[in-house]
Length: 275
Image (tube, rainbow, N blue to C red):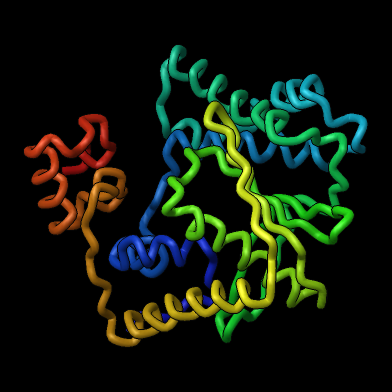
């Protein structure tokens, strides 16, 4: 029987729903799950914006963001995650450009100097529908209508049909803030930075919180069943091509080969190097 985790995050829940077997390898077997280039780009951009938004409002300029990016770049460049990408000089320049496009994208969605920032990178834990929740909120803002929970995304915006799924994360964050402070935030915001910049907003309500926390609890109950019975099914699909555990997953390997033969798998999928 596998032990339940002490806390359950949005990302862990998403991984379990995507593929229970991958969740097991990551959280039970503790196998390495190195971040890809997109994730490292996101981490660097998030760090720059965290430092920027911790400054007084008048200092939150593009010029200041450039200075911060230059100052902290060595931390990323010398970090194990970046080194594991094994990028040549050209690819490193492309990496820096992608990160800067994401950072600069914030100004296409708002003027940071006009935002009343309450906190950045706020760690929060709460019990949501009997689930031990943990998360890190990119930013809490004070608006004229109440508190807003703001989260940055450096990936592609979701299609309209997946908008509500994307906003579930911000609703859960808002629910956790409400548990901790006694005051439910009034708004949630997802800021998709980069060339495809987009802002998604949602008005937080008790009804919406109940819906999201119930769905979260449903995933937790399925996880409990998996852990109690030590049964973690493989769920195959196009994301098998990006799974770090493809080398030890027979079902995943079959799916990758099938999709590759049918021309439905990108030839640069990282998992192809593992099978």
